[in-house]
Image (tube, rainbow, N blue to C red):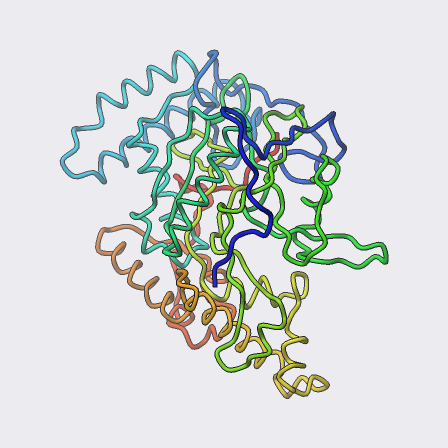
Length: 430
């Protein structure tokens, strides 16, 4: 069943985020990627005092001559505006808007998307995500335009609201919250967490680890900032927001009603519930930048819903994560002394069955890899009818369980274009 966080919700103060814990001083080891030292503010890529900085895809500031940098924003912006008008039947021609955008770039080195352009760009970025098997639903993405929100406290509150809206009582809703873009004179604030909800990894005195190994580094940073930590395997990490490259991050405890989780059980084995496993319901990625027409939005958390194998075959099964296969195999009574018994495979299937069963019993949206594979081929067919390619990374599209039994296994895909935009991209350092 879905259950709330164990701590009681803290009362709030008017105008103040009740979960705020601003950093004190500048602890070692933080930056746009956890564990990096602070970096200087990058040089402006365009003249002018305001407007989002327009970047060349896949490059950091200062990588080109001023002439090249000035030329590229205009080309990227024009290409996006033409695509926007081309895919919107009945829209007026792109000419007037292109002239307006180019004039703004000429004056300020950047431009501002309309609300409609932002929503279209965010949805197409999902459509272009070569590693995502669930792109059939790209048009349903709910876009929250939060470009006016720049204060860490307000950003944290909006992230919590994102999780509430996405959870949607169990009927998970695809949502993106787009915060302020980078500007020529300063970068925008960033969310340091990989996901809005993630479990901590606690270092033990004996050198061992409790919790999620993937959450060890952010937990270390949070502890240096003043977080008290926890003592369990599934302690939710605080949200970490950094306003600028020289600023200490602020940390925020996630409120009870912003985090929903499902306790895991098995439809045939009662002992499975005794393992004490659970997982959160909203996988909201928060460490990638959204790039649209040359404009970079470094804080744009987005989510779909889980495919069961993401939890059962990776998060709970990988040797460098929760590493549960041997435990499940032992409880199943399998012979783990010989690889030919296929004990890992058998334990993996039961673990994935438990995930799907538990989410279904809790009334929470989740997809199985067989159904989602069929839907992905439907998405490809739809895109082909519209004359659009569907770049896909085979190693990510094919499920980690029974891949050869799914229709996405036995075929080739359009090649991945790293310069395709709009897109979600690896965020460059400060």
